[in-house]
Image 1: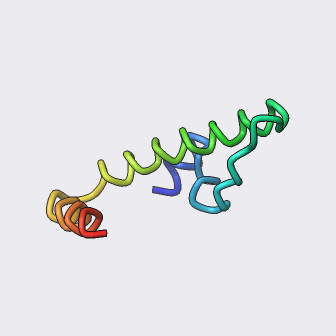
Image 2 (image 1 turned 60 degrees about the vertical axis):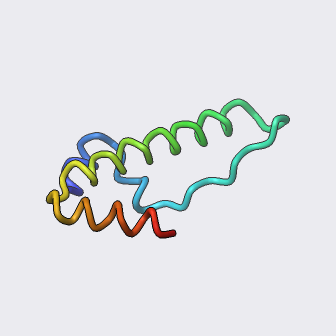
Length: 67
């Protein structure tokens, strides 16, 4: 998994904390960084789900819906 995330330049998503959401007056660079992190988190989450066995995916889905 890490090999793929490293290749896709998205390994940082599982290693770094999510940046705070920038305010409306924050620099464009901060807003772009936050959006990229959120988009990459979605990609990594989909990749993780796609690599799970169907049984594990089902268990995870059940667990998430109970929260």
